[in-house]
Image (cartoon, rainbow, N blue to C red; front, top):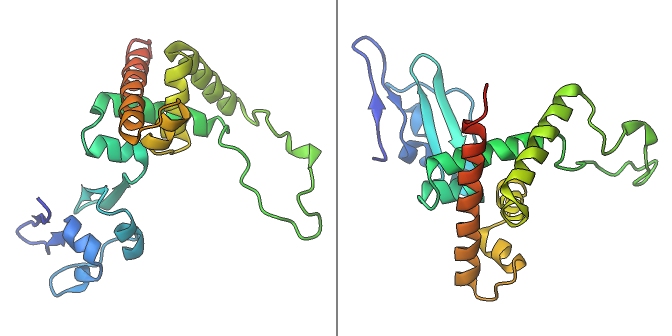
Length: 199
């Protein structure tokens, strides 16, 4: 359902549908309140409808963007919710462990200069070290090939076809299907890994 309206007896209506969000500017009509800050209309159009709107009247709207390859696979029901959750947790440990790489800019005074004080490659906090340990344990548990596909799709956000091509498949169809099968297997193993562990 594209258009849902939540209303209470003595409260104004709130538009919570994708149609209003994609069109942008529809929230300003009479009887409707301006939503809290969220993604711009351009960002919503760029997502091509791969987002969810949650929240309620009390807390406001919450947008969950699902326009990365993993989110699209889940929305299209190519992977289950359990597999999606396992892969997202895997990507969270990768990101929180500081393994995403350096996002730097060019310093015009010292172009691409090396800074030995930045401790590149080392965990900067204990929490970051714990996330890295969780990531490496999960990676070792699922195996080399599933870890490669999980890293490519969940962490680096490569599409399924290029990931399958990196596995050695020439046909787009076979590359996509092979990457998806391995991704499902990795997601299932990761979900079981974190489900069976004590809190």
